[in-house]
Image (tube, rainbow, N blue to C red; front, side, top):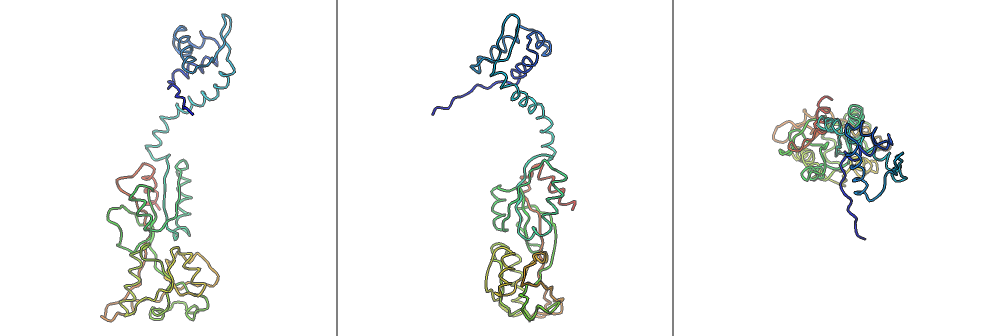
Length: 313
């Protein structure tokens, strides 16, 4: 089927049509438009030729809209109203008050940080459409590199972050131990590190959180142990579910404690500064940070508002 190309019609012609449709008198319409009658008559005739339809029935005594003209009036009125609003929208877009943002996030921020941010940001900037996409850190880095998301909320160990991205630290938290509630250590309020070194682990793959993964492994190696990974899983909720099934224990960010799964308890470790490695160095349990990350060269006005909002939190 052949596509019919319709002519481009200037807004000036549509405004002239609408004023005449409201006045139904060429003289009165020309007065409102600050023009003389003959050019208005020619303009309306030219518009009808462009469209290939009659918009007005004219006699010496009257001007009336045709059914086609009647059908176009509300559409033209809306078109002109939208056109009139464009300058204000341009200024609002430049100020970051309207727009669209794609924000990727890791599952751990869904417990507390993300709901607070989304509520606060939408209250402050209701006309910025915020699209949220859950993804692991490795996926987020790929999306950011390809410009498929504007920013991401990522988990990482302190001091470990891709140098080509800008970031703002949103939170810092320790790792805690997720245990089956039937485990002997479940009844201990703050178990010691040495008590868990030989326990099977349920753990996330290194590719999705390499800096925290390496920090945990380094801790075991410094204590003269090799971590015994019994099962890997990507999502923290899945890891906790597998702990409840008795597959092992897991190191998870403290915020995950808000995910209350029957059969699982969370325990902070006793201060590990008392524990020393074979070479005499003190051991410390890795912490993790959540950062808002973005490409510095691709900051839109709406993203700039999100960054300012994040820093204000």
